[in-house]
Length: 406
Ligand code: GLU
Image 1: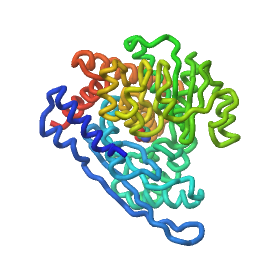
Image 2 (image 1 turned 90 degrees about the vertical axis):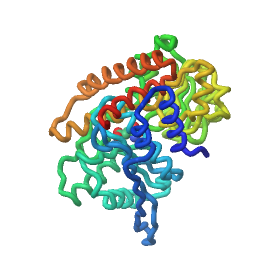
Image 3 (image 1 turned 120 degrees about the vertical axis):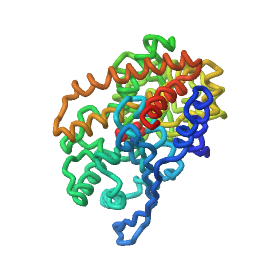
Image 4 (image 1 turned 180 degrees about the vertical axis):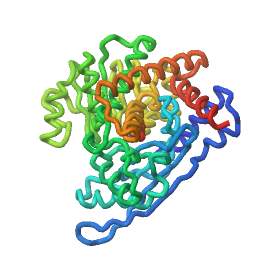
């Protein structure tokens, strides 16, 4: 397994070669401001005590309070959280929101916990970290396997400990608990706005054939949004398998099948394929929407798409990036492609602090031009510096952060 933090640092080294940044600034960005590991004791339903390992990495707050989600996964470990916190720093800068970068997590398989155990675990994570969190300090949010309900428990726990009633310390809450309209589909929708802004520049057809890897909140929302706009979703996958129909999948039926059987596999109107086969399908757009390190030097040469839209964080390794760049396959990078999520999180934070509630229409009206503006600037920068879109995005972000820090 590749170390995502090393990969993130390879990207940083690369951008420092493409563009001239201040050496001390780059050296500072090679380490987070702080990385915190905690042990979290939880009383299980059978009264036994289990200790979990948890994390919060505060990477950089030059542009504003640390911002970034909390991941619950059995593979989550400190290097992954550090990489994700680094990418959050750049993502907030790309999105041009007044937020820094952070990330948190717990090494846990949440499916093995009862609801009560999950609640106690989530509240204990907040209890251990309450000193460093806060609307003006560090503002977490959902990530893989963390839900609006978990954000409610965390907000409540934080209010109990500190007396803070703004509800602005966690974003991604349910709407009736201070959440923003549109936060659910925001990452997928933002990705769609970015795709649309770049489609012609990247010479992609008006109606694309799309393969989506990962069918969680981000992947399933993106599938629906692309389909609504006349694109054809020819393959989707979950952690166990993938399904493929060259004429396009009926997503409502796919959702119903997944709900009733618990999996995508054996969907009647499609062929079962493997996750690896999905990545190698010939189509217009490949959308990795699950985890890091899925396109590597092992499979990058076999990729046959016209472009890749990274809705996951870190799905393409630096080695694969080089191969794809040489093959002329543009990769729309995570820090741009999935920045719609954190942008609407920022809207949520602002609404909480001002005690306002914006309509979904208002939220999307603010989101769209921000995504378009970032897309255009990054495309121009990558053309000007004759580099990839990822390096274009890194340059834009680092210039904004450097200006604040020096
Ligand atoms: N976890 C999401 C991400 O990776 C959203 C973070 C947020 O809303 O703060 O961008």
